Amino acid sequence: MGQTGLHLHVSLEDRQNLNADAIQGELFSNVDTEEIKRGYRGTVASKVAGITYRQLDYWARKQIVEPSITPSHGSGSRRLYSFKDVVILAVSKKLLDAGVNLQNVTAASLQALQRTSKLMDPAAYQTASDWLLQSKSIKLFGMGASGLVASDLCDKLLRIGKNAIFNFNSHVQLSYSATLTKDDTAVFISNTGKTQEILQALEAVQASGCHTIGITHYSKSPLSAGCKLLLYTSSKEVYVRSGAMSSRLAQLMVVDALFTVLASQDYAAIQGTLESSYQICMSHRVDHR
Image (cartoon, rainbow, N blue to C red; front, side, top):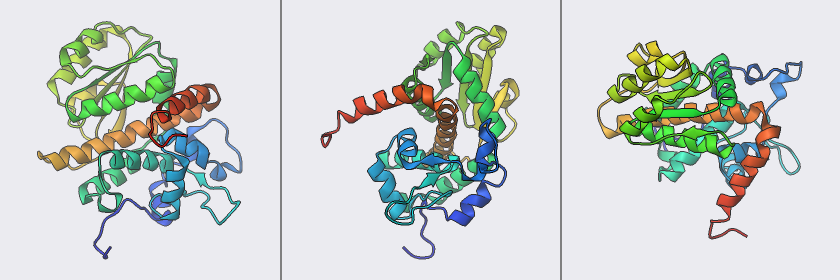
């Protein structure tokens, strides 16, 4: 690949710069002098990201996604992945699942991921995680490409035993928007924050007093004005398919980051459900032993 080639790999120096305002330790309650060394072992990082350890090892050896806390230094050494590393691993898996060559990610997509990474506020993700963990039910809302992201988040929440609901039909979304209570959380996903169906559902849940989380572009919009908590994305919006791809990848990065915080917050409690869902899906692989 020449000098102008684009790929997903971010150098360790650059990735530390992206983390300058979002130190991993701030996501957790235990703070000590060894905080900078805290991270995810390879086995944990691979399970949270939804990939095999073999894939994780391959990406590290090929310098596609490297652990930024402690890289491997040969046989017997232990890799340590940061919060951002795990998010990048999960997004990388989605790119592969979509048939995208990691060595040929478009400039717009790469820029969207980098900009969204800079907007990640640990306090906001921690609050969102607390709300989701404490909620009796979680209702998700999204249309079009954002609906695909809402479905992905719903699947992740079901993996850890949460009572989550999503349906692609806008009328069904409106129906369950009327059933929310103050003990529930509603998650609205829209890149522009101006999608009519989403705004109608947001208006419908306001009287319930439930928690409302918006995953949307970093700009003023009716959605950002109406939600109690915002998790921002940043992607250049153009009205062609490549624009939707960039915004969707940015949204998926936010979803993966949120799920990583959820899994990290009480990993001992949800480890069993993660392992069970991982194993039952692995049993359907043709090469499973």
